Image (tube, rainbow, N blue to C red; front, top):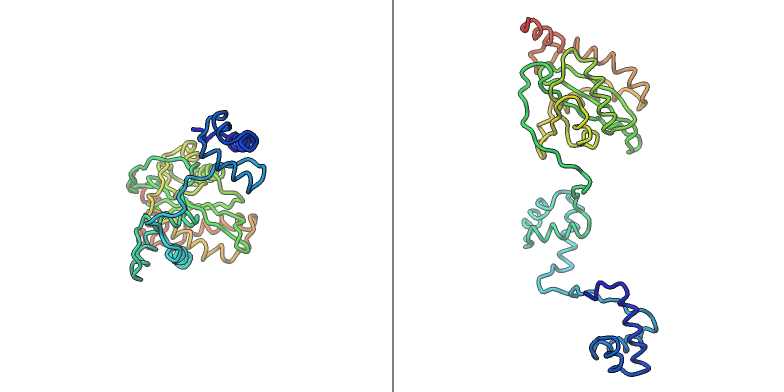
Length: 292
């Protein structure tokens, strides 16, 4: 189509200049356009001056079913007020007596860039069933605690817990990416008295598909919109914050210096309700005796 020709604005200008000197019909025959089109370009040249005549958009100026400006403002205002998904905003507007379709709400939010869309660079990973944590190492959960100063994240505390024995490990780093995630899992495996068989994480960038391809054990991502999938590690993160991190400065050396003593207390002396008020070390000893 000639509309896609990047030279068309200059060709229209040349046709209009030729028509001004030799007539519209002569210009139409020479350039291969209709008389009406050349006539319009000539008038535009007289009003706008001698410049390339750009291609006008074929988008209609209005549509009989388009949303009113007032309704668009209400959708945007409701999004900024609730800060929730399009489905929630649609329901809230419905409760207020506003009749609008869910697809219109989604289009409006997308047009105003108020929807969090999936990154085109994020690689897809296949879902896998969750293994049963019936022995140590069958399923361990890993996560990252963000430590911020003045609202800006400066340190990351990697955490890991075994679902069967509640044995835990943590390590602080300045970066959170696939490389530091792999290094953390290796450090945890060296410290653990059992072998990891499956590591479960959320969908953060540090646990991306690059991490999955390089880790030496099976890697499973949590299911989307299933907040209880990582319940054990989230509870450990809260305990770690309350009992250690909140009382320390946000300093890499100070945190990594205090973590070993706390982890010894957590794994060897702290009683857990989830394992009948035993310590992780006691439960691991019982598991080893049962195997023997």
